[in-house]
Image 1 (cartoon, helix red, strand yellow):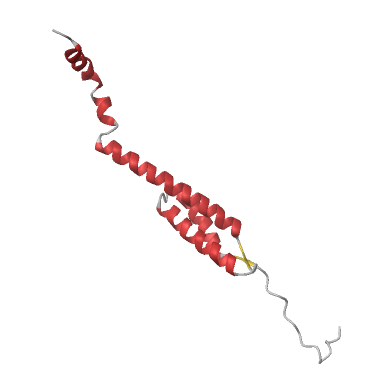
Image 2: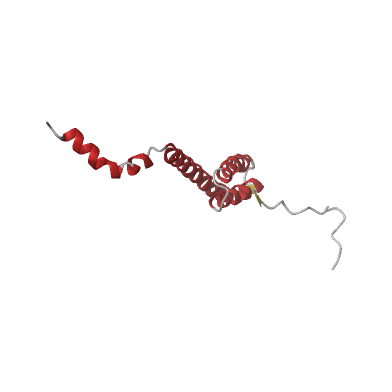
Length: 119
């Protein structure tokens, strides 16, 4: 094969689009949030997901991974919401709001009879 003529310089191929590292980290953190890193994994997934979305929007198509970032955001936000609800439920149980009425059930029969009886 002959060498190209000297008047035509070699041109490198155009760069290929690549996946955003932050989008990959968002997806991994979102999955890890459901596998044991409750709260912290969700928070990291949301942070990485928003950074990845900004990076993808500014890249003019050279950075991909919008789907991974979106799934990471969904997993992260859902995990944060359920972690907060679980924490609130734990605090209410620990404070006795839910358990106190059930502990008083054996004594409620005698209490209600005394208050409802008319002399």
